[in-house]
Image (cartoon, helix red, strand yellow):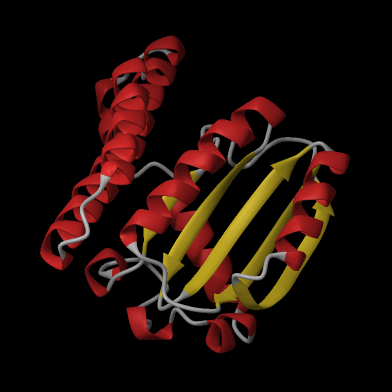
Length: 204
């Protein structure tokens, strides 16, 4: 089993609708292929970790490198792992904003404008801090205070992670519809996206 982390610069800004389609595709395909990971997006830049079977991840890496939507791609590492670091995420997702970055330990002078290809490839320490922050649930102190047993903790952990993912999907759906409504481009395609997202949310 291996893990890769890469940074890419999008050829053009991604709309909320495009991000939603990408996330839905990742959730479906990664679950079927045993891939876990995390995807962060901001300032037309993607930061992603992927882990799973060697052949599966190497195949994904080749596809990413050939993807014409990327202006440039930089792979930071490819390393063997004994245990998954993102075992709870078929694909965790977060859009980076100044509000999101507030209070992250070790990123006092790092803002959303710094989340760009050129800055991140020169600052792998910041990349590690970001990935660690969004990988780790931040309700651990509450769980410790409850003194819950392992099974209860695991159940709560899964429920909260699922809710966190659902919020991201729902937010993307609503923003996609709002953007299309303002632009006068609302179509059957948006309705299909809504139906697909609702199916995922109801089944989770």
